Length: 261
Length: 281
Image (cartoon, rainbow over all chains, first blue to last red; front, top):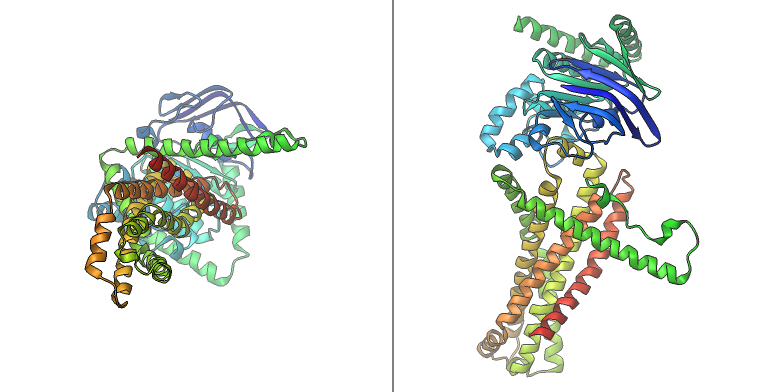
């Protein structure tokens, strides 16, 4: 789905050299790196938005030529969730999620509703469909952005820091559950994160972006173990109410999985 | 967002040394040229976005445009009515004081009708558009830029020019023409109402003179000015909005710049069109 071969690129004063990367169809790759390591720049290179100094970039089996804009049809095959909350303030959650369909397919209100509501329910935010972005919390906003990114049924989903922002533990778990579900549905995913907790994603290929190099990391268990420790260390600082919320979420999640079985 | 458009006008000041008065003058002229070039570039983006609209997108953008016309045109009726009645009333009172028989004079009615349809109505309408819609556009687009909405829309395959520029430019152009016509109607309506309370004014004759003094050329130039000024206000305010880079503090600065630039441009463009019209007719 994405292939980088000996790619050189520059972001600001940082030069990235000999970047090799391969994300097969149906695969999931997690790019771990500290803030400012160049993760968003790397994503932009993968999407052809940032020009490269050398090497070749393939996106969806097509070689990208530096400076050439992606075709509209290709853009629509890529879903993107950005770091910032980018829901449009003048549209409701349902309006935001249905925006790509309304714009590209000219769907009318009722058809849009029929298409958007199941997706919102899938992400556990069906109840907030008519609320506006200022009336929802960060967890819900992040999930709404994920719902908007997959509404066009993309082949590739890019999540740029999906757990960044003020997500509480319940929000983190909801995002992780959504990622797991999307991956099970066969969507190829590229995730960038600075949170080691993301290493708990199963069957993912892990890469560290350090010192302007992309280093593959094969020891998933070690990374996951460290992530779990970080997560539980973090939880110790939460209030009783927050812990109850997390516990409640686990119960709902467990119940959902039982029902599905 | 095109990088070239997002960049500031470059001038001699970039050289990093102290400039002589002549170089400073030249620098300011160059920056002004660069500014107008950027506006022309934005207009081209708008035009290309408009031409590239296809079926479904056209329907969606049409809805956005209707909303913009309602906000900039219909919702501004109250403000325009107030300004038109106040200005019309003031002029009428002055005329009654200094030229008591004006309503019977075709020559004076000609002057007043031309003044209102060709100059006062388009300029005041444009100023109301700047204060009401133009500032709102700059703040809205600037905030969206800081919040990363432009990038998010682009990631969804939504054309920024179609989503942001087309509805606003067409909306303000149409609103400019409609409000301009409404301003003229309200002004003369206020005249007739105020005149009806004044003894010795022959209303039917005044209406006849007004209709006779309203030439097709006046209506034409009024429509041209309304549309050109509305479009100019939209382009200037969009330009300032989309040039906000990453900081929230830029938004008030850009808004104030947009308002001042649009005010000055309104007067300059009005003069240019008037001169062109009077010279060529």
